[in-house]
Every structure is written in C-alpha cells, then in structure tokens.
Length: 95
Image 1 (cartoon, one colour):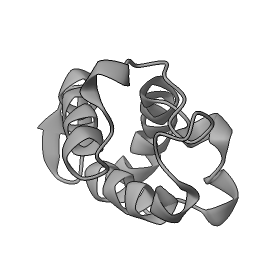
Image 2 (spheres, one colour):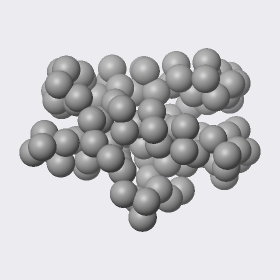
Image 3 (cartoon, one colour):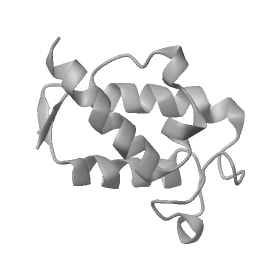
Image 4 (cartoon, rainbow, N blue to C red):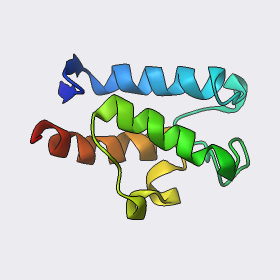
C-alpha cells in the first residue's frame, strides 16, 4: 500500500480511478484505452488537457509535481503515470 493524501490506497485503486477519470472527464474512448496506450502521442488527450491531468494526479498523490517532471515520459500512458506516481508518493509521505 502507498499512503496518498492521508488515505491508504493501493496502486491498483489509483490505476482504476485514473482510468475512470480518463474516460469520464477526458472523454477517452474506453475501447481504445489500455495501460500502455499513448494518451497524448496518439491524440486521445490534447495538449490543453495536460494541466487538468497533472492537477488530478497531484490531488491523488498529495504533492505538487515540478514543471520539469511534466513530460511524455511521465504522463503519456496509464502505466507511465502510475510509475511516476510511485516515485512521487514517498516524497508526499515525507511532508
């Protein structure tokens, strides 16, 4: 388990929440979404939505994401976001 924003979540919970938000808020077609689907590189999410996605992730992990970390390497798929969140969660716990 990872402590995120004062509530224990499993990484699987975060993954499921992220996938649900991508479908409901960002209107990503559920049939085209898997954990390795490129969100920005395939055009499923446009560049204007990046800050909304970053704000969502910040809220889930309980810490600010530095501007330099907002890259395709960290945000272009569910798996990339999950990996990035896993690296940021320990920083949130130290606060």
